[in-house]
Image 1 (cartoon, rainbow, N blue to C red):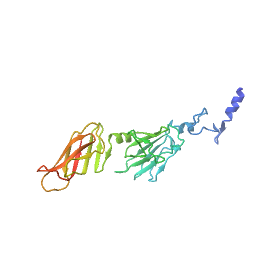
Image 2: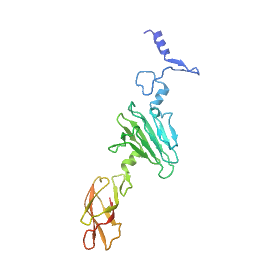
Image 3: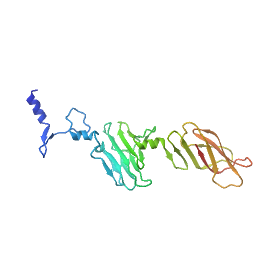
Image 4: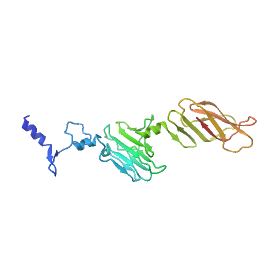
Length: 255
């Protein structure tokens, strides 16, 4: 091809805009991986810098994101709990990334992040996939589509994996370093012997200590005993001063 022909072909891709600037007449589409000339707008949409769709979001209406939000940071700053839906993954190329953060707006105000189709395709690095997760005040999360799941990194994963908690009647609190506290504030013992309490989560190694108290008032003195403790459970019984088993509603704390 002659030089003039090459220049003519190049000119066919360029055109002046309203201000007289020479611009690409047919810029590549988002996520284009061909050999086309890249424009600054194309590079911006690839995450070279945070996207122009970076924004604060204050509404309590579910924020439905799309591929157009790739590379954006979405900062939740509403006065009440908020939620957002990740982009639909059908046809979405691996590497698409969105970031979220939740500003403080009062106790209990959170931001829930949901998968785009309601399926469990969010990987918080906890060993299983989830369909949703929650950001607490001051937390951030970066979600990257891998082609199979949304891989989440950020401060929320540290809290989720190292400081997991359940405030139910039979609940637990994980502490960074491996310490776990578990409780049951409504365990009912049997009048015929020991009963196994299966812990909400398994201890990483072994039980360090346990204590039990009686919730209900019974005639006479009642003692609570635990035995055969393992990382997954412990046998519990309540006894009278005479050594007879007694059914009682008790509270147990295990570390």
